[in-house]
Structures are given as C-alpha cells and as structure tokens.
Length: 197
Image (cartoon, rainbow, N blue to C red):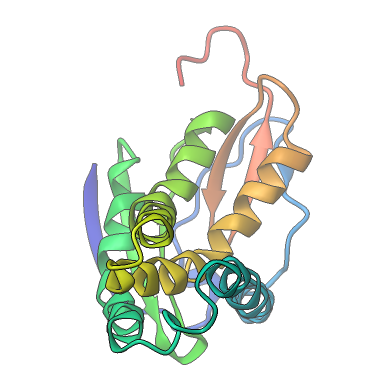
C-alpha cells in the first residue's frame, strides 16, 4: 500500500482517482454526490447517537452520560479521524488516496484496486470496530471506563458513511462479485476465471 495525501477535496468528482472500467461492471445504486453522501451519513450518525445512548441509560441511568470522563472520551474521538482513515488505507494493496472534506464533516480514502466483497466489508468496518465497537463494549462492561464508553459512542457514529458502503455491498453484490472504487462511486463485477484479484 502506498498512501497519497491529497488535501482538501474540491467537490469536483473528476479530480478523484478513477479506475479503468471493468467489463460489464455495474455501479452501486448510491448517492451521486459527496454532498448527498454527507447528508445521509450525518443522518445515520444522529440516529446512532440516540440508539447507542439507550443501552447506556438502561444500564446506568444518566450517571455515565453526565460524567466528565464520558465527554472527554467523546472529545478524544476527534483524534481518531486520521487514524480511522489510515486503518482503511492499510486494507489496500496498491495506491490509496486520502482526502479531507471538513466542510461536510468528512475524511475519506479512495483506492481503485479490485477487492472481494469480504475484503471491501472488512476494509469498511475495521476502523469502526477498533475505535468504536471495542471501546463502547468495554465501556458498557466496565463503567469505570467511561472515557472508553464516550470514545466508542462517538467513534461508532463517525463511521456512518462506511455503514452505507457495507449496506450497498451486502444488498447489491452477488456471490463471487468483486468491487472497486472509481471517483466517488463503487462498482461491482463478476471476474473472469483467469482474473487473479
């Protein structure tokens, strides 16, 4: 993997890395602009904040949510933004490009190599498991770790765009299909028998 930091995304899809079209490739049915993706992802994030607060309140009333440690952890989640993208990048074998889009509250990576549905889902979910699910689960089990609970609570929601990618892969890619990114879109295709990736 070779990471290229590209700076602020200029909202021009033509400026993003594009892959050569694969034979019979089908575009994911997904939002057609980064702005629409951001709106949907932010909506998912707000819903997740509420849903993930329910177990906390059910187990500990409001004691943990109003603790200083919880909110310190929530603030620390902002420090995971770049590491989150680096974990995505590590799942690629070839060139991968990191962009910021702070106006829409997003950072993202794009790599144009092909990958299996399983690897695509693993790549999409890896940072959310490391920075979100793991600390959230530990925080629920051990209330003295309210910093971890706050970190996980916020970090899980920061992966909302990733969950959207996983949903599209699970609902649109048939068995044996491979996927690749090109610009802001993902595509799937059925590889020929002699294709090695």
